[in-house]
Image 1 (spheres, rainbow, N blue to C red):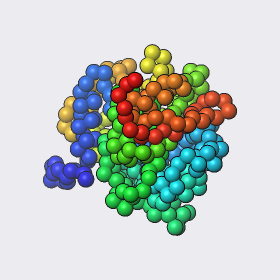
Image 2 (cartoon, rainbow, N blue to C red; image 1 turned 60 degrees about the vertical axis):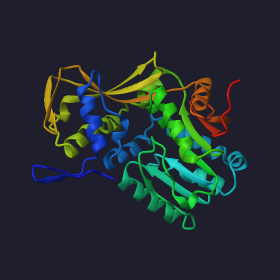
Image 3 (tube, one colour; image 1 turned 135 degrees about the vertical axis):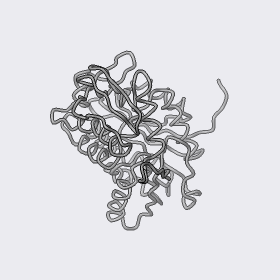
Image 4 (cartoon, rainbow, N blue to C red; image 1 turned 30 degrees about the vertical axis):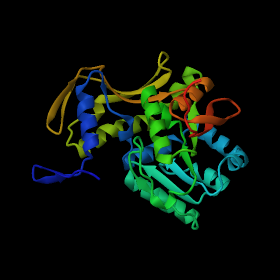
Length: 325
């Protein structure tokens, strides 16, 4: 629930977590704001545009994989499972999984409430007999899922290589939170992007049409709108760079000149060339991905990739942990 505060005689409905992350992130060095705050309604809509761009291969590759593995998935996942999708967005890939496993219920979880409700209504219209339970929440922490699915086996769905947005220790924390949310015996179907040619990666995050740049800049617009910011958006440019040491694409907003602005009355100054780090997208080799899953409490049981090896989808299970060896 959003915290309501009164400022200057007007009620502020800004999420207090958003406020804290922005103010702390702008105050630290280097400056950084968590990528989860990209996804207001405008940001979510822009991201859906990104997924259809010619440079952005992950969506096409993953969709192709999901379409091909439907029979195998149905055989590996328990009948009557409830499908729980973390960060559901527009749920464009969800029908491929719904058609494959025919779940007893579908629980889409997303931080963008309006977008979540719109996509849930569209999916309910497509599947009128499906029990759809939209859940507005931050899925990075363990959640108490609806009681109506408590007895059902569960399949978590985390497509799009969103796990790559998190630094490794945070990715492990998220996987453990998912395990806690879904419970022992649950399955997790997760997408992970592969390490590949740097030019291919950089084009995917800096498209010719400038949609990704608009997606990045929308974060500044959201700060201005929700946190009474005075950021001169035109003074920042989008940058996407490959960090080979950390095996990730980084997105930044770079000041093209010296700038001064306020956010909720607090002053900030950036010099030309200084950046606000807004997103990471880590890429994983096959062995790296399996180690990450195991560190998060998930045992990999199946792995699929597209013909070019650009992207991978893993099915893992929350099995009982045992001490080594």
